[in-house]
Image 1 (cartoon, rainbow, N blue to C red):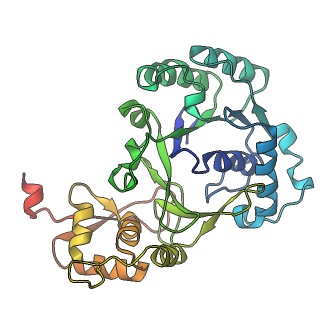
Image 2 (image 1 turned 45 degrees about the vertical axis):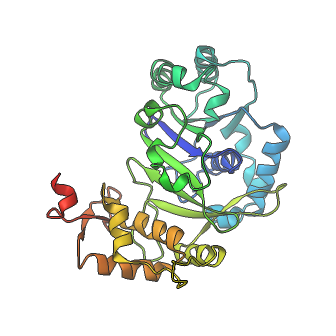
Length: 340
């Protein structure tokens, strides 16, 4: 994220976006990582809470405190949260919508500067039919205000209503309701999508995949698995390792059978189908195979190795954070599908 820019955080209604952005504000206000994303220093944050009240924010605080070690790597006490009194400001007013929102925002930022504005959710403040309003609201209203006050914005946003398998057929970048501008304007797009395992979701980043996330083998990857806690009065999202997440998904999904009754296995063709139309990171391919074929990560990797003996090849992209490169998969140039 850059000052003057926007990042969107997209998921379905009721998925847990509010818990995530509220606890991210708490962690980043203390200078601590959230979902593996760490600020360079404690951030002054202005949180617009368009759907939650003080009680809900308090529940998020209790969940954050109880699970702070798993979330941030540090076991925090109530005293450790005291700096949030000056680092995190929550705005509950909901009458300032449409272009009035930007005037209100500018007044708040003039009164007290912030590093990051969190808007939760976009639909509470855009002030009209989103397809008609979102371009002007973001380009002509929000971004000039952010640039004038030298801060960035994280915006929680909804998907349209999806069919049961809608996520599997949706490009993460274009998953937010509101048309192409919702995808084109943000510097980056985060999506939180459910998996078949109860309470387990996967957080993915598209456009500028430079979070610093790593898989169990230490390779950079564009997704992170998160497990939601069971207590609704102390909610939290906890990071889960890739291999454990794969096992949870495999155990949760009923075995799929082909017409002959035999269990379906991961085939090299499954890998080719995923990368047929555009290059995809190896970690994305692994996660999709785990979700679609009820397999473990090791099985998915074996299928990728086999596919690379045929029509699929890999290439590396330099990671701007240093360390291991990001591995991508694509169809080989001589493949007929690419000769169109």
